Length: 169
Image (cartoon, rainbow, N blue to C red):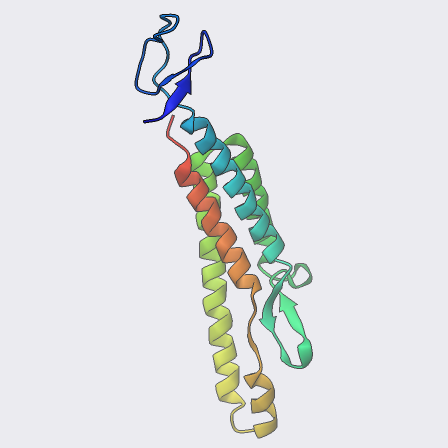
């Protein structure tokens, strides 16, 4: 059975006791776990928002000859939108807004998921169109989805999990 500290005398008492046996003070029955839970959700939310933000600049598509293309793609890609979503996630984590965190994480997951599906289908289309030419088929065969998508996806999911860890007020 857990113990908590008496709010009046500071001595340790059994968690479920309302009245301190040492000083007689009536304590709140809330334990220290909600504060730890809030801190854990904030840390998890900040990590998730950071991963979403940083993942935008990591390789989303691996190209032949050691080249890669990020999700940001010089401001031309959907990475710009995901950066805005990550900044909103940072704000909502700071404000401990459960709904805001959940919605920004969900928006991130949906945006990343749609683009991942589009990217993989485009690569498959290019591979099928260039299959006739053996030289181009070998080059396009080396094109793959990079680890940037995984980092961004993990970040968005962590923001959602952090939102679910916050207790409703």
